[in-house]
Image (cartoon, rainbow, N blue to C red; front, side, top):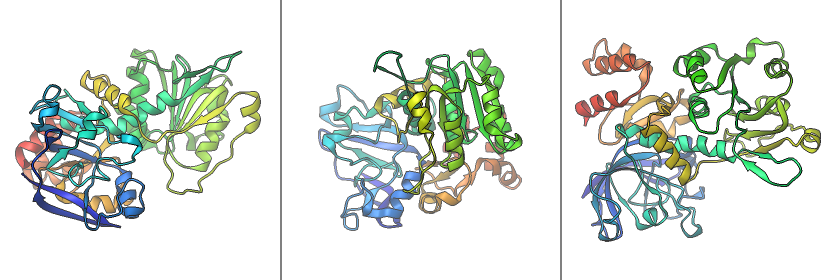
Length: 418
């Protein structure tokens, strides 16, 4: 079976190549990838090469396939796994295998499995670890978004609160509590708002801050205050650049009590410190944003740590249970992380996009691996459609869906380019 894939040979050395996959073993599965969403982790690995903890030392001789947020369908199932999987099943993968203590992961460490490919071989350890996840949704791109969405789910589960008079910690955000999502009008922040409003363990009051009116307006269009109210959550959007004292204003919204759960979605010192200042007694600050500077630090009030039991957590990714929860919520229509997606491209756009990712604005860059298409911002479809029927029809579909990528757009794209 021939495949086409973006393979990693060394620091910033990515190559789009066609090559033969070996026949699958009885404990392996052959699969077709349909979609993969690119992540800053791809960029970091491409920059670091074999210095990255998940990337093997010999990629110059045995290149690996990149991409770890992918979805597709099974083509051929080896004998060992035929009682559990069958050809035609849609799937997503939890890349953090943790197999026998190894950091090896699809998209970083394997020659024959990664998201930026047309066909892949899923090795035995993926199934052994329960990381090949069935997906029953209509659109493939949601399966690709399950991994980034699981990071949000995991962060909510990682928060904790203490129990008065004992040393027992209650895991998760505070039920019916007050929550703030700081710098939260970006793609991942919107995913967090969506989850906070629609999950089972939810706050009663949620404040989302940003310093950009346009981002906040778009956020409210996609996740309106009225939708939150239907789900028992009072939602307030605040531009902290427009208030004289952000701390005093945010505290006034809670009558001075502060916030039980604060999520920081930007690795900015001032934002972290604002989060600390608005914590309630027993408040938990979740530093969600991953900094690129290994020396990144901020001030934290340790008087409050001692006397008010404030505390901090941080998570990097979600686990398999978080991915399963994400997939199930998407399949049932409870959450719609389509707001994360801002660009669409084909396999031919992966190399340039990956190596330039920090300089491309917007959110998730969604790749359809069986098509050729330059990376294109969804916001540009309408302008491009003036001279191109393909983009004109895509723009029409997107407009009907509140400006969001959707199953109908995916079907049209694949019918014209696939």
